[in-house]
Amino acid sequence: MGGGYAIANGGWQLDPETRAWRSWRLPDGSVPPTFIQVDSLGRIHNVRSVGADSLEYRISRDGAQTWTSIIVPLPFGGLVDL
Image 1 (cartoon, rainbow, N blue to C red):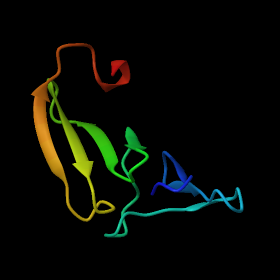
Image 2 (image 1 turned 90 degrees about the vertical axis):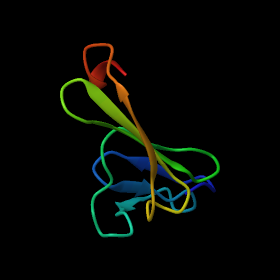
Image 3 (image 1 turned 45 degrees about the vertical axis):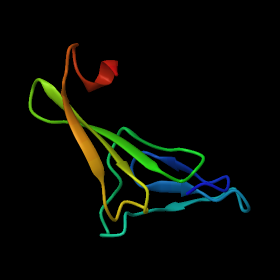
Image 4 (image 1 turned 135 degrees about the vertical axis):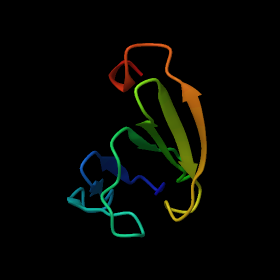
């Protein structure tokens, strides 16, 4: 990522040169998860639910080939509130 690209939930990527949306998948072929964001350095950030009372924050520096994560308690109503 980076370089003006944007992503949207459901596996879509915006090409900054053509301004066209195209299908985008993670290296393993899976659809990118919801609650995903890519920063200006191309790191992929993801937050996902882990049970009813915890969330996992993940970051990938290599296009989602590997992830570093931490699980934390969810002190409020759910991921929608995040």
